[in-house]
Each structure stands twice: as C-alpha cells, then as structure tokens.
Length: 122
Image 1 (spheres, one colour):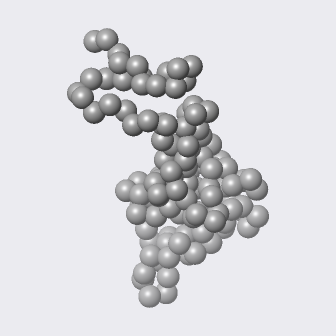
Image 2 (cartoon, helix red, strand yellow; image 1 turned 180 degrees about the vertical axis):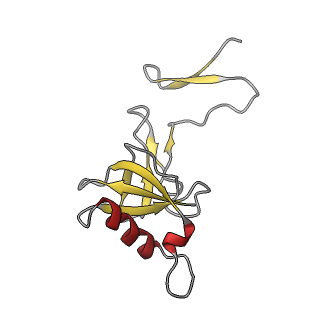
Image 3 (cartoon, helix red, strand yellow; image 1 turned 30 degrees about the vertical axis):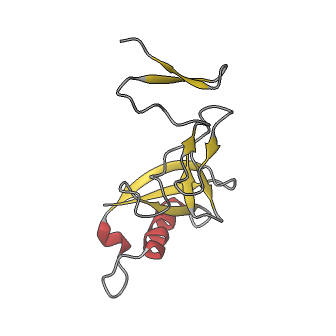
C-alpha cells in the first residue's frame, strides 16, 4: 500500500489516503510518486496537491499526519511545535528541547515555565 498526503495551499496536511501499490506503477512496473499523485488527482480533483509519505520514514523525514506542515525547500513533513522554547532540527525535522532529556532510566516531563525536564515520581 502507498500513502499520500493531501496538502492545502499553505502546505498543511489535510488528509492521508492509502492507495494500492498497483495504482502507483508506471509503464515499466516501477513505483512512481507521479503516477500515484495522478491517481489521487483522478479521485479528488486536478486542483488538489499531493505528496507521498512513508511509515518507515524513507522519504520526507517523517510520516505525514493531519495538521503537519510540508516544508517545500527541505522536502520534509513535520508536526507542530510542542513548546515555544523548542527548536526544529534540520537534520531530523523533529522538535528538540533546549536540553536533552536525562538518560538515567527515570521518566521526565518538560516544564516550559522553568525550561527544564522535571522528573516524574513513580
């Protein structure tokens, strides 16, 4: 199965659809994003915008989700910022805290007010 994300004019993901692999095959039986996009447009209209996405992140960094942004220049999908102090990694297109979460076997939660990880009592 192949997954495609429909984008609006602001490059925000509106929906994710799954189509059969054979609906993405070109005349040489090779998978083609362009063929898959043409198939999606045949179902949802020629004025729609589509990008293929992958569960195993082999393309466009992250699997698209409704509400995610598609960055045209980076050819990447990414979600909304979880906290104002976090920054978007241009290596992974995932949001990162200003400091890494401690790796000591405990559970932590981000506290935006103090801009630090707070250990969760278990």
